[in-house]
Amino acid sequence: MEKICKKCKKSKELNSDNFSKKKTSKMGFDSMCKQCKKEYDKARYDKKRDKLLEDKKVYYKNNKKKLLARQGEYYQKNRDSCIESNKKWSDNNQVRRRMLCEKSRTKKHGADSTLTEKEWLLIKSYFFDSCAYCGIDEDVYFELSGEKLHHEHIVPLIKKGSYSLGNVVPSCRSCNSSKRNENFSDWYKNYKFYDELREKKIISYMNKQIKSGVDNV
Ligand SMILES: [Zn+2]
Ligand SMILES: [Zn+2]
Image (cartoon, rainbow, N blue to C red; front, side, top):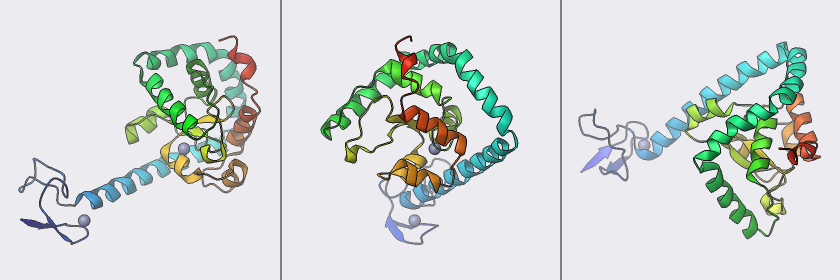
């Protein structure tokens, strides 16, 4: 049996390869084909995300001074408690598994791989548990996308960028795929979610200005 997709109007064989199962519908399948559904979901996600980030950008602009002062204080005061709360996450082994996967991927490209779990948690708290590029919070991101922030190589793997402190940042999928293999400073300046504060933070990070703290963790 064939079914015409509501969206692309193409006729496709009615099976679970082409249409998602949907109990509430008459035929038992979604009215859109899987391919259209995927595009539809992505568009919806992008719209929601862009709206959230635009709001955040406006807020940033209006409260820059206050935020700058607060972020510095926050990092100093809460570093320990951030690390503590992040530890809870690592308990479920998710972090560990992700890191092993990243490490083997990095090694395959012949790049150095030295990042430790402690360092990754420190990096995340340094970036306030949000995407280093657009600033979306990991919790919000998880709600929207169902995944945690990616381990992004600032200098890309293809250019032998290492999996190490100073080169790996938390990033959402959209920023990660927008950056791809581009040079950070060229790409970020023209990025739609460019932010001066975050740029400075990333540059400090690349210069390993958080390294001194790691040994004391
Ligand atoms: Zn379709
Ligand atoms: Zn992002």
